[in-house]
Length: 420
View 1 (cartoon, helix red, strand yellow):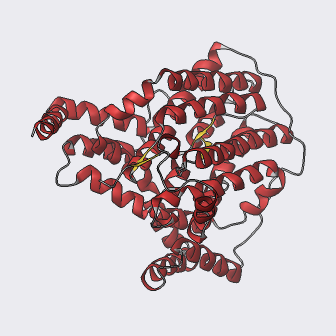
View 2 (cartoon, one colour):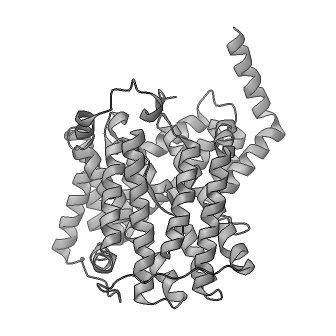
View 3 (cartoon, one colour):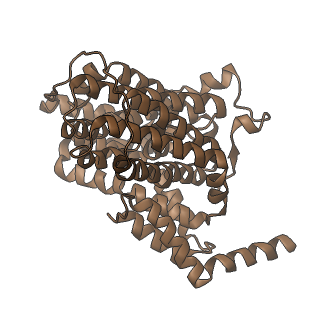
């Protein structure tokens, strides 16, 4: 288990405070990792949001307002948490939530959906303010949480392999550059080199084709909210479960896997406030983001985990710029080959996945069967009541460990160790 790194807001003795440490945190590794997280968050996820907006027959101005809300507020969350707590905590929005909205907006008027966005933010805020999420996070067995993280993030690894298969020149050479850099040039961020090499190959092959997107430089148009029970149960409840059970849980687990002590309740409160403000601006929940936090907290952001918050700071600043100029930025971002984005994201996840597997299934892991169940459920496409697999992975893993007596045995062992 790596040494725990508390948030700087709770431990004034940490050396990474002040102007000089902030400068140290903005180095080539954190900057390149922040750019990778931004590219990941501004490509495929942006398409999902635009598809949802199209299914709801939103105007271009409403779509720009949606993108403005989630990227500017998500980026603001990253900047605030990075500077306040000196931890690599990134904000964005729930990507699965945007996906389920593509179906919901076909039958629910957008003004009622906006009301549901606000209601979801209120529920998340209430859960964070109650302290319940923090107590639950400390109660959950670490191996089961780590197994859920490994299962939820494993799609990045398989996505990287699929990208190499589908685009061997772009993705394959980028992956080769990553591993060669790690072997030969230890002072240079491998992710940065892989991205630049892949981009160069894509330019050489003529694979940077601007995507035809109907958005232009238009002013956002905000929608007055309306409230209905149909929208509440179809949108607000699933979004709340996704923010808590998928995004926040994944981010908290990743941070724990990297040795940090995340401010769980404050992360949940921020996700609730972000959800309310995003709803008022016409977008769904802006919250702590699992995938972007995983990228920014990984070893690709540098060997010193105390400086990795610089990656989230860069990620947040770029997200805010993207949101401010969404109407102009989308076509250029979408011109990047999807295979290149996927392989870079997968390579950035290697350290996180290795750490999660080691903590979940190490020799002294007390809940290996429960962790295995959590892993398999998180890797599946299982969904129930509009909630995706990471949440159910935690539930099923804990249930199996309780049934087999793994949790009680682990607690008895810890009590004996403390007694001696």
